[in-house]
Image 1: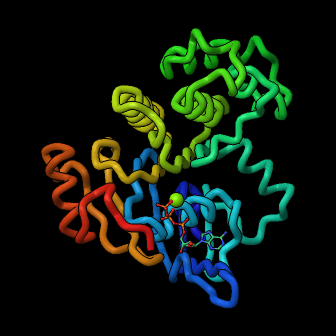
Image 2: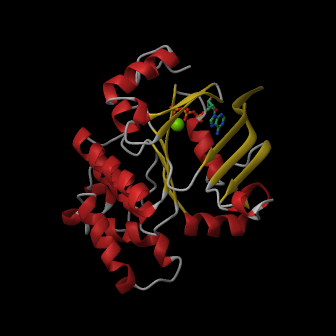
Image 3: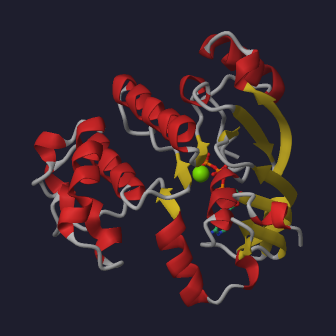
Length: 260
Ligand SMILES: Nc1ncnc2c1ncn2[C@@H]1O[C@H](COP(=O)(O)OP(=O)(O)OP(=O)(O)O)[C@@H](O)[C@H]1O
Ligand SMILES: [Mg+2]
């Protein structure tokens, strides 16, 4: 293994993932390979069931692949013991998934701070970053509320802040704008873009929305567990042009895919 390979944030090599569904077996990922460089911002698109969430889960080390290899920052997740994998994820990866998994008994700010408490950091060290995230995600006046007193969009923003509080080098987000109104969604996209441009963080984001994907640097389109195509967002004038191209490659209107 070369030194250069060790510094690549994400390397997926020939990954296949099968799930059992009753007597049948579904191949969610089929011999998929993908490299994401430092400071890259990749939007993963594709029809429902194309393998987007599975790909993110495999890169997060939450789902072991059946074949192939996944390296994050040069470390091979496929042969990492569970305890190390948990620690690795907690310290290096920021995860925002479709289910927010907030703890009902904790306030918004305590939910956000949770990943840090596990690492034993003091409150005073983390206060400035907490304040910044609460402000940037428009949660400042909701910080003392518990999840059941927050709207779906607010809960989603709390989950995003929780993913960013550890300053992770790699951010994996599965439809993080799914329950946000378009203004909040665009604000979150701007924040992610800034994290990648100013702080060289690496971001992979799953989305169905061209208006979200357009904030990324490149778009990878999945179909039936494989990469169908990829393209740079800079080649498109705006989200409409991008949506038109996406529609051409997948053959259905963006965001209107039928469930298989
Ligand atoms: N835990 C599981 N058990 C069985 N099958 C699964 C499981 N997770 C995913 N699958 C199957 O793997 C395929 C890919 O699923 P995945 O969740 O990755 O799709 P997706 O692209 O994220 O779809 P969506 O846009 O609907 O979120 C689908 O056929 C799905 O039914
Ligand atoms: Mg999904």
